Length: 403
Image 1 (cartoon, rainbow, N blue to C red):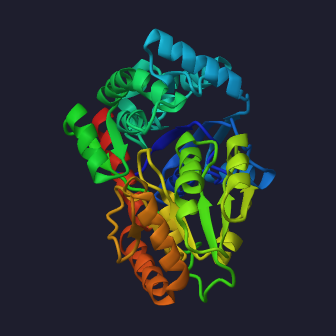
Image 2 (spheres, rainbow, N blue to C red):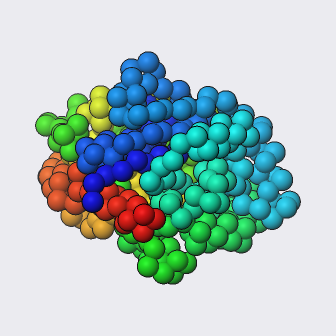
């Protein structure tokens, strides 16, 4: 069967690649294009808008590109979340909801037909007309019920954990309804694929996250300074929590005195700057950068002290591809099939995490082994070319059933 027409619906523009979902969406779109799919894109631009060069790249990749640039303010989102909690509805239903954008998409769908629709994340489910669900692939990127459950189980009664506990059942219901209504749900890890398959037997598929092995080459040589790098979209609450955990619970237990910390990521909120000021070692907040490459080259290790979240971490794959040693919590590297002491260091206790950072800063042989084996792992399992083939096969399944 030849490739057909596919509409990709995303909550953020695939370019610039400033977040994990944008990286995944762009690379999968590129792989589908290479396999002959005629692509169209409908996207919101609630954060960074594509540059002229980004827009040109998307126009070359797609037949039609529609990007709605209406911004949803933080206060609007807070108000929506409070209303969702009060009414028992999942916050994902309204988080990216823009009525004008939805109306524009509905007019488009009435004037054009597509063989398959790829819906990026549960957040965009409300935009999907019920009559098109049988033609739709939901690229979950996270098992949202599991992610909210991990937030609800956090330590202490924080506003974040309280809201998660109040939302847990609503998110579970909303996710179940979405997964059972679409033709296929794509998961990024085997465990999440099995979870979705229990909700909709026979309709879950595995399409993991990946890394551009041509773009990201293994670095040569050791950095001149002892630098700990944290990297990730800082508009995402799980990343903000990880930064605070790193600064408040881990860094105070470091033996090392001459290291520094770099917090790299787009849209850092005030709490991230406050954490940097309170850090036991000198800390820099970069905000969005066009390329993380100089920071990777200058860093001794990537720290991923995540305590909640879902899916799998693209930043870990990118670091491993570039030969940057990684230390992570179990949550941070779950679903990637990595082995402690072989291609990554895994530590959940803050004191143990700090001890491993101290050792990694001093043990060049350990870091060289992690660098070498990490690159080998992503070469063997996480190139976008093979992953794109998996998504291509899923889209062909759906197209064939709908024909």
